Length: 52
Image 1 (cartoon, one colour):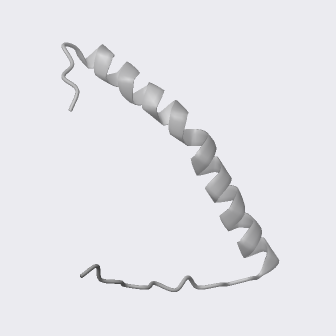
Image 2: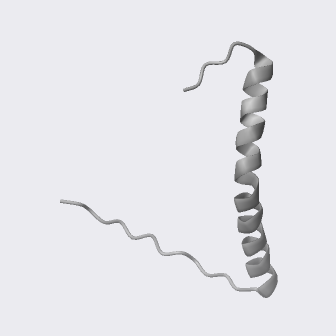
């Protein structure tokens, strides 16, 4: 974990991290909205596998 000496540094760091993540988040939201708009309700299968 990164140590910060001031709140301003902490806020600047988190804002930078959010800027990096936002394009992917917006893409995922668009995919979700498109699927809702088209009426397709595909449920994802969850497969639990065990590495033995």
